[in-house]
Amino acid sequence: MPRVIVVDDHAVIRRGVQGILHAFPEWELCGEAENGQEAVRLAETLKPEIIIMDVSMPGLNGLEATRIIRNILPNTKILLLTLHSSTELVRSAFRAGARGYVLKSDAEHELVRALNVLAGDGTYVSPGIDHHLAQRAILEESHPAN
Image (tube, rainbow, N blue to C red; front, top):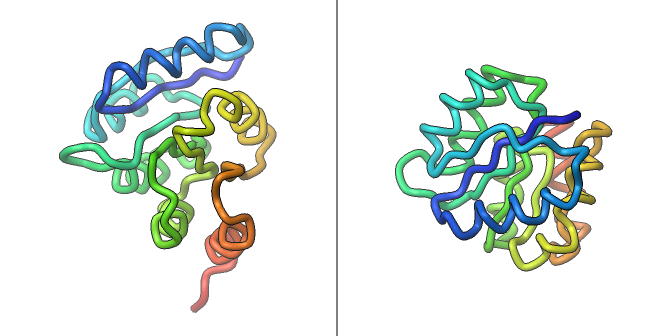
């Protein structure tokens, strides 16, 4: 059973993600954090398979926390859950080591699908994101220019 941590500075979002996951007992919610610093500490302690993390948080943001966690726990997969669909943010997410990018507006229908793709070692991008842009960002990350 894959273990998941949810990281968002808004409790209502954390509760919403928990509500979605509750209907899928194959996913074990093992912890939650409200900022990047807590996420890093919790990840080190719990060693989850997947972390669902907001991008915009005070202090250590989701991109910075993703870089740190991926360095410490390279097998932990990070799914960024955000309001932001900008080209540069999508690129930055995959450069930081994220394996998935889901818009909060798509989460109700796409979150579990995204988790399943990540659990199967794939990458996932929300349907609300330009697919060509996302593919370029993923390719850039997997084949960085020297």
